Image (cartoon, each protein chain N blue to C red):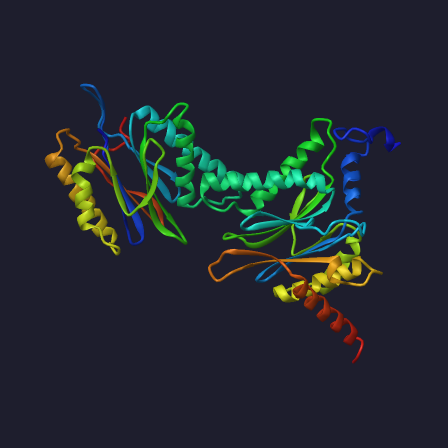
Amino acid sequence: MARRYDSSTTTFSPEGRLHQVEYAIEAINNAGTCVGILANDGIVMASERRITSGLLAPAKTSEKTYKLCDHAACNVAGLTADANILIDQARIYAARNHYVYQDPIPVEQLVEHVCNYKQAYTQYGGLRPFGVAFLFAGYDTQHGFQLYQSDPSGNYSGWKATVIGSNNQAGKSLLKTEYKEEAPSVQEALMLAVKVLNKTMDGTAASVEKMELFRMTLDEDGNCQHHILTANEAKQVIDSVTAEASSSGDS
Amino acid sequence: MDTVLAITYKGGVVLAADQSNARSIISYQSNLDKIKELTSHSAMGVAGPNCDLVRFTEYIAKNLALYQLNHDGTQLSTKAQANFCRSELADALRKGPYQVNLLLGGFDEKAGPSLYFMDYLAALEKVNFGSHGYASSFCLSIMDKEYREDLSEEDALKIIDYCIHEIHTRFLISQPNFMVKVIDKDGVRVSKFGGDPADT
């Protein structure tokens, strides 16, 4: 019954749904998992690195984490080609805003702009929606550190901790129990993110090659620092999570 | 012919401008308010033809109001407002320029008072005090001599009075009425004026 209303993005089904948008959201559930956690002194984003072939050249840049401007970065789940277009949009918008106002763009404005762009593809043009979900991490002086999630529909919301990509429900349920009321420190958030990825990638052992850990903090001058953990730093976090897990059974 | 003066003090900014509106041999008005309030805590003194004064100030003020509506009541900092003005002047410069010289003053909770000098070619500079028009020849040296880092509001108003007195004594063109406004943590308010702008 729904089949008749599937093909056009810009038509509602009789039940009031936009099927193409929903299918786009489904596409992301096959993508590598991304976790975002708001800490009290920064933000942590961790993502699953899917290595599809041993013949692939080692990546020179991340295919999950992208810097949008000095004070904002994002993690991608979904079609990388689609993501590149949107990331370009975000970068241009942030830079243009800085040109006019000489002040860093408030994070939510940047997120809203990307989402408005995505929304246009669900309402006019006859083009398919973008098959990308984002985790945006940013800092501004008005609201401090913020974490946002957006999906192909163009909706976005602010989160303390969230998961996108494959097995995100398992990840979210773990966060619900493990994320404490008073926000964790960046170090604790890194460990929690690894725990979540362990759960969503269940079966495969946690290792440095399979995870990418990113953190955003402020230095003493109040400037944003973007840092993708080196192999050694990531290994330390993963090892301490493994140690904690193995000793947790003892009373 | 317009005179616009401004000086920062510890805790705020004082803006002053003459109130005459004249062309050729005719005086249209002697109670024109050339200091346009932009947001609750910023205002801009403008020198230039009345048409551009009105067009530019209302355009900027309404765009700043739109920004607040679109962004949940967040106000732009004075620095951001000044840079926005500058970019509008720069965009219009090679299309249909605004012939306005500005002194934009504002008060921010974190940054405190600030004053920005802008000219019709879209130059922008943050300054402690400034003036536009022929008045500069008379007043800039007074402000330069009297300005200190820790002026009080009373001190700042006195310096403006010195400048206005000098203009009345030595400037060829008669500018009897001046509008003086103060911007501090409580917002923009009129300190005094020669001609009541409300009288039409």
